[in-house]
Length: 323
Image 1: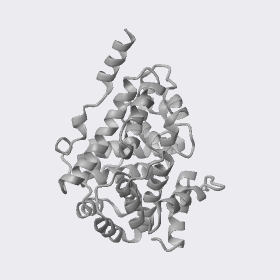
Image 2 (image 1 turned 180 degrees about the vertical axis):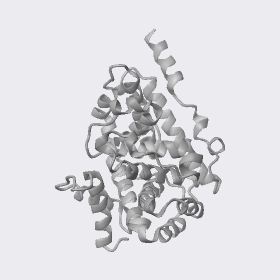
Image 3 (image 1 turned 180 degrees about the horizontal axis):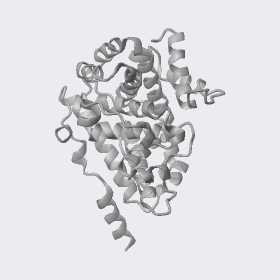
């Protein structure tokens, strides 16, 4: 009976893999290789969600997640995190599925897992979102990034083409001052998918947003282009030039991708190439910069520690002449 109930839960909750297809989403197609790379990322996310939704506990889900191709495994862990956060949010008294997940192999993908929690927040009623907001005061901002990605990916017309921005009051009071920035970082990541990894289309879409949103959007672009791939070195260098005054933000996003890949124990070639193009440095150096920026990290008078972390990384890249 338990197996039947798990299979039923998996079937009810898991999104259809067709939701990750460009034909379904209406995203720009640059070429078949880029489309396949980005569709594979989305389908791996959905596959990881299904692994978690159909498993009796996180350890059983880990066995399935670890069997997935290494370059795509982070997306699968992100999807699994969404499933655990969503299931926690659907339980009247909450749950500890996400906490147990992060206590196991999910810890190696902690950044992606926090992003996945943001997908779950986007699927729950607003009043339930605080129940699954990650408790980590630094990484909880990645959940808002995940929320922004979800909204731009699934509601592209409104969040990308109409450039809608949610009012800050939809978030708990302690998050409102920085929430729009974190959400925009997620929207920037989604732009990479919406544009089909085509630099010209990406720039066209991004430049339609108000100028005060560009820095956060470029940061998201840098992370997505480096983590997910889909562009060659020439295209990545073109993108770096197009970022102009926001090169440091682009590089900061790439450094985040470097750290996430290093922590997970596998760095695909496309990530190393992108980090080299955006940060003009190695994966190891970029990851080390993110770690160094954590030293004595605290909230400033006007910014949360997460924002200070991002700024330190960007400033370090500029100081080294990388951006």
